[in-house]
Amino acid sequence: MSTSSSDRRQRPRRPYCDSVFISTLDEPKDTLACQTLDISAEGLRISTSKPLAAGRQVELWIRLVNQPGTFLLRGQIRWSEAAGDGYLQGVEIDASEGDSSHDSQDWKALLMPLAEDDNPLEA
Image 1 (cartoon, rainbow, N blue to C red):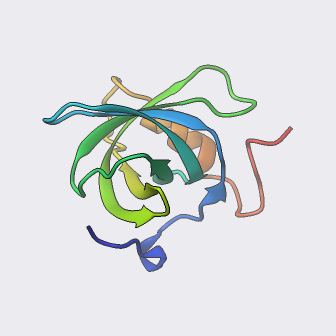
Image 2 (tube, rainbow, N blue to C red):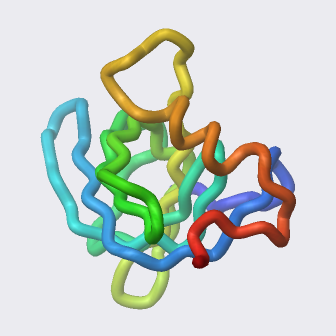
């Protein structure tokens, strides 16, 4: 497993802690309940009970405070590292233009235009 590198982040991450479900799209299939630690327009850092290998394709279902509905996002595990009794995973969101099967464009539109100290998740 490789370690994370905050140097490669292109967008600021916002601390955000809430439950999220992640499902692997490739074999072996697996669905995990996990916790978000921070989010950005292009990725999330999550905490899981087991490691997921870098390169695995995943779907995530995530609700944001003060936002209607649930976001269905697709992405790729970019890194994974052991942390205490669990694992930290970096997920890069797939923002394919024209793919209406998931909500990445809505996610990006919500989080992209905000300055670092703006927070769409607070009332």
